[in-house]
Length: 166
Image (cartoon, rainbow, N blue to C red):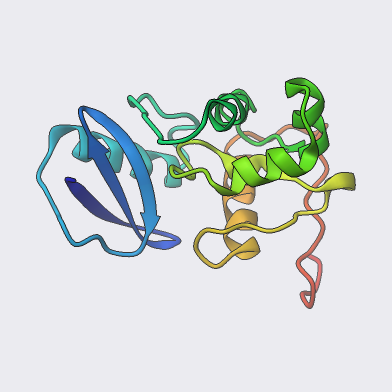
């Protein structure tokens, strides 16, 4: 499977393609580097995202997963940049349980491009994140989007445990 790695503020991430669509984004450097037009486009869009020039991605995505996972991932893509939804919000929208939504969210093979970082716990708690450095990566992504798309109606995220609020 062709892959291309790029350097981001989160470290190296690798995008993988299959049959003309992006199927994965992984943390770290991939083995099978390829000079592929779609992968170059994905890397360029990731760079624009981290530079605050892009808030969404215009790439063909084909994540592998169940029908329910695909419904959850489509709901994630509908969350506007800089905004969050709770697992409960998505569960109500999809007629499911928050736990099932959380499991599908955690199984997302294309983080950032399918913005699973925009899902938070009840009461706005940041919750976990399986990519990069965990919750610190999630916080960085949300802060990046909020700086790029400021909206005074959104409250800032609570400070990370053990940090001094600004």
